[in-house]
Amino acid sequence: MAQNLLTTSEVSNLWDLYMTSSMFACVLGSFRDHAEDATTRSDAARSYQIAARNQQRATELFQREEIPVPHGFTEVDVRTDAPRLLSDVLVYAYLRRWSQFSVTMFSQFLGSSIRHDVRQVFHECLNDSLGLYQHLTDSMLEQGIDVRPPVLAYPREVRFVERQSFWGTLFGDQRPLLAAEIDALFHNMTNNRLGTTFMRAFSQTAQDPEIRDYFTRGQRIAAKHVEIFNTLLLRGDVPAPMSSDAEVNAVAEGPFSDKLMLFHTVLMNAAGIALYGLSLSASTRRDLTATYPRLMVEVGQYGEDGLSLLIERGWLEEPPHA
Image (cartoon, rainbow, N blue to C red; front, side, top):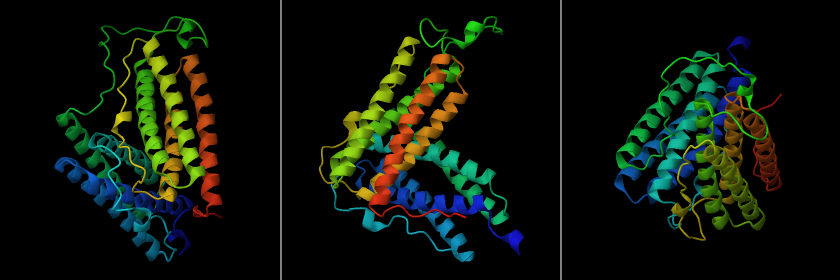
């Protein structure tokens, strides 16, 4: 019998699936209801349906195993009568970022699961996310609202590294950025620009002054990281992506509860640290390998302070543990 019980990773992954899906269902449902364009409403509705389906999948497994279903997030965390907060362009940027986040998360969950029914759940979640990512990318390209990564001239010959200067230095002249390093800088910059915009939206709609200040601090941190990545790209003669700060409407009452916005920020903060770690592993130039750990420490401290706020407000559900 014991061999059929859920493993620690499976229980943890299902708990994460439920918590994140219940939160994203609230966010995506609000985007669906407030989108102006019919295409945006359709794509937000499709995204919402996937999140709701993922939440139901986790619920069924918890019930089958007689494990208490987490509380998560519900309709009380969303104000349906709130004014429109974000533009359709920003909604699209969020939808695709969520699909990318989901693909990464479900790939990890699938790879750490053993039991057939659990693997089947994460396999279905992953397929849904992959299909959504493909659809959203095509839709954004058709509408001309996609921000493409930089393009480099194709190499004309195979060359080998001949000098130790390939590693670069902490200061002074550096070798040109590698394609992998440019890609990492680009995605970290776009991710932080999206984060800056959401922190701006959250800070202007939060009701709790301390939580509002927390979001304002997050906006400053994200903006500083954007400037760091922007500088590194420009020094390498690589154009930086455009900003979307103007896509937040000036409203004082938002659709989301402080609890949801705070949990969302802590979750995306953790995803940002993971992206920094991946970027570090893809970088070999010394100035880059020194920059990412420093930024990770700052983001990690910010995330820890967010968790403290959740605990102080009694909003942090206890994850499964020994």
